[in-house]
Image 1 (cartoon, rainbow, N blue to C red):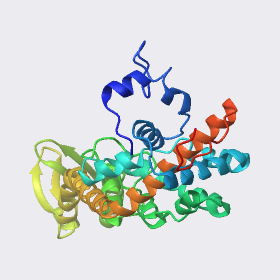
Image 2 (tube, rainbow, N blue to C red):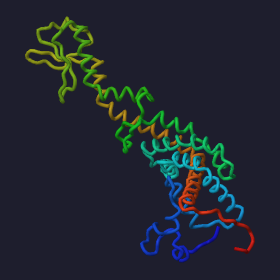
Image 3 (cartoon, rainbow, N blue to C red):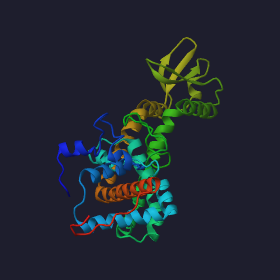
Image 4 (cartoon, helix red, strand yellow):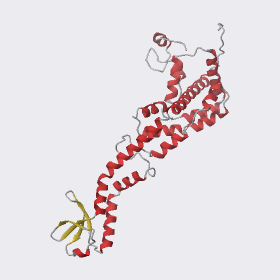
Length: 317
């Protein structure tokens, strides 16, 4: 690469205008119509560190020429990259264990574009585009993430709601306990009414005693099941509990905490599996970033009616 110090870059206005300090008005501002953050960074690096080797320059120009001449291919590739997330930054956060559910979901959705990109590049001719066409589409990783993460995960990891329903039977059970606690208590009350034949039997709750089975005082103790344990005696009522009721009460009390802890553990395992794919992800992200930069150069050439320069090793301009 050609080494350019800060003063040369500033004087040539490669990436920033001297007048405003913005990208607009610089060489990069003219060339950049990338679709992804990854492609924008790649194109910027190409402008800041120009190639010196003729063979490398010609290889890049050949790819741009093909994309310039094939309007359909260029348009379809740019459409496929439209709105892709920043895969490079996301996998970095995943490695650092700071990625949340939305990060991994964005990674999976972005990887969903890779098969289309690979298919479109199947008919390419230039060396660089054929090389990009060999990218790994990361379909196993994508399916793993989509199988675990729900469609709208929260930002926080300690509030639950990350794991997709149906992935973990235990998470589903705890979630159902938490969300349908009243219904479960109602079902238990109906079962006990049928079991005892006491229609006025009620399941109640207070902060001191928790859940209890309320039976009218007129009901003789002999009519009650043997597993009823007296909890409190009132003027006209007797209150009891059963092992099933105490177990349900304990589950309801701990369901939220246990659900959140289990979801955090399952998410942590998914994040670790995703982080283990770092080499494949970085390789695919690098391929997309190069493709985006090439498409940007081709799009700029078409819009501005640029022609391809002839580059060789002679000293003649």
